[in-house]
Amino acid sequence: MAENAIITRVSASPLDIDAGAWNALLALQPLPTPFMRHEYLAALHASGSATPGTGWTARFLSLWQGDELVAACPLYLKDHSYGEYVFDWAWANAHAEHGLPYYPKAVVAVPFTPVPGTRLMARSAAARAALLQALRGWCEEAGVSSLHLLFAAGEDMQACTQAGLMPRQTVQFHWTNAGYGDFDDFLSRLAQDKRKKIRQERRRVAQAGVGFRWSRGADIAPADWDFFYRCYERTYREHGNPPYLTRDFFHRMAEHMPEAWLLFVAERHGQPIASSLIAISAQPTSAAGQKNPEFVAYGRYWGALERVDCLHFEACYYQPLQWCIAHGVQRFEGGAQGEHKMARALLPVPARSAHWLAHPAFADAVDRYLQHETAGMEQYLALLQAHSPMRQPR
View 1 (spheres, rainbow, N blue to C red):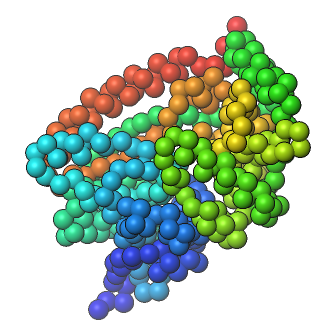
View 2 (view 1 turned 135 degrees about the vertical axis):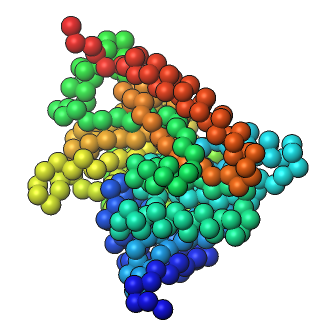
View 3 (view 1 turned 120 degrees about the vertical axis):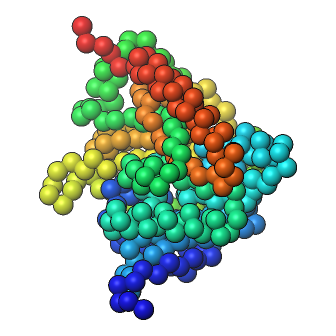
């Protein structure tokens, strides 16, 4: 065997891959996020949140050259389409109507996490192409119906397009820090009706006697983690579903990735009544002392034990944005869907995925569908951008 031969490994658990090698490779990528860290993916597995029992069967692919990890990605076999946020139910139904199985399918994604970022970690463009080739080969050998790379970064999409995968575009809503001095400065940049609405919503929460405190990282007390999970679990169950993530998952986050989390707790009459959990990526300044454009916050989870008018907006948008401004965060990503976020100055941006279908006829049909969908999505994005909540210069 040649000394520089690349070996492909398939792992049934992220725990089978060296954490140091995985995280070192992630750090080299153009768009790393905390959700691709080994600790995060391992916690999903070890806590029982993303396992075969919940429909997420790990088949992580990694490419090795000697002892060096040159490319890797999180790959899951899925027997449903929940927890993905790029919807393909119509594709599954079309397969079923023609007597063809759609599940299992393969996804390169972070379970339950609609955050754009690097999916195909690689040391070079050639290694990324080799990883994608290995993915296609594995899918064909395994006989799965399809392969889906969800919320992929630009370099991933470029590799996928070159490999013949079909691109798809959806819309998310992100807030960008334009150098605001404080929250009032931010409000002053909004159109008058939007500014008035936000002030009214915040006033209602304050008049209800609700105040907030926040804590970050290791300063989040175990009791606060417990309280947060009560809120998170209750909100899911009020909508008729069990929560995706277990309490043990958050215990592992507190133990192994505390620096990535920021918790807001709403209190009334000295008692906690609601909470929101925000993830944080990178640091406020680079090694050169400059503002880090990848100092990003991600709106993730929330829940409440009491109903207070406008509390959701305060806990999930206004408190986090106020913190972001005060701490120099450059971007706040609001998660999947939600035109209502535009009224809070989260502006539309494209989010991309790539898809491969094994059946030629279905691949052709989906390709035609995606061409029409993409044209419609671009028109939708342009329409949203034309209705910016920001104050227009005179």
